[in-house]
Image (cartoon, rainbow over all chains, first blue to last red; front, top):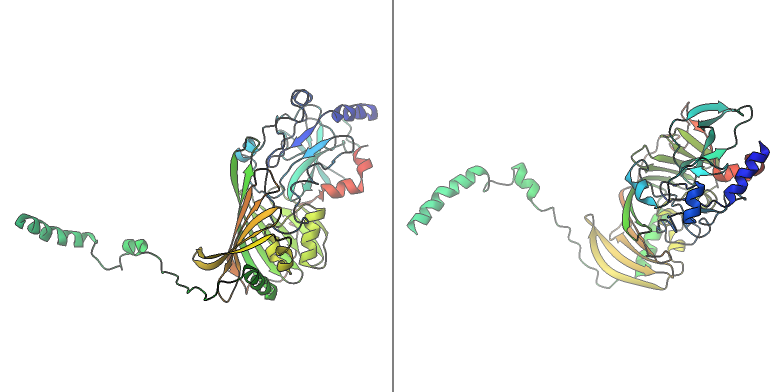
Length: 159
Length: 273
């Protein structure tokens, strides 16, 4: 199990995640990453700050953009955390041109804003998880937005 | 000619019957009538922009509580350079020094931010989840904490914090008094400022209550210089808040979750197991 996972992580090192500003589109498909480098999203959507003063209220760019989410991977997050749009429809679609391929090899630590279809809810140790075809997600707040982080299968749930 | 006057003699009563010449008690004509003119004499001396700004800041500082609606439009520049404009409405309730509640509205139920002086909570009804964490002792410090540590911003917070002038007056390279203009029926001073990174304009009510009515900023530090405009409407300077209005009480079936930052700070090893 451990070996398999570290192999996945190693492979994931070459995979750049481009999390879009609105839909947080995640490109984790190896083929897409090979073809397009960081994916078609490039720099992503550009947004203004929401406040005039100082740098302290401004976190849409710069430090956040290059935030390392996982030590093993190069994760480029260019997310506007407070443009509040309906993510189920068009806003997400026009957000970023990146490949929308929630592929087979979803690495632990990856973050998506919407779950794939057909997930089963289950509770372990008081935490609600989603099992989506064998990939386990837990809800988190990323800034003010609810996202789902891929987690290791909870103990006692190893298939 | 005779024919014409005869025609008009016949037409006039007909038009009167149709209501064209009736007094403005008729609802259809009343709604067409222009709204009452707001007439406000211009000041004898052209105001200094810094003075107007200071006056607003002083007035905001003097308020111990208020509610306001922030209607914001944010410009998004896509990788194709197409510009889109996304709207967002926030209802802000604030009681100094340490109570704040913000309702971020959207089509899927929005989310709510609570700050009760001790903790802050974020609640998302659609996902039925919430998170809570320790806050700072004041609204200002809590806003900083939210922005820096949790990446939760309150748009236009610059205007709402305890010392707005200290933030607004930072790094100004130019200040212009543009003039006076009506914003949503309210006479306002129109000011324009520049900093190395931002050009911004503000419209401040011209009167005994110098409230900010609109803010527009152009972010020059971002390629393409996207803009953000926020109208501040429905100011209520004497709201009455129910007891525990600022305290979050999680619904029974709501799930408590954590922030990504907390997860990674606490158990990076566990997550990678």
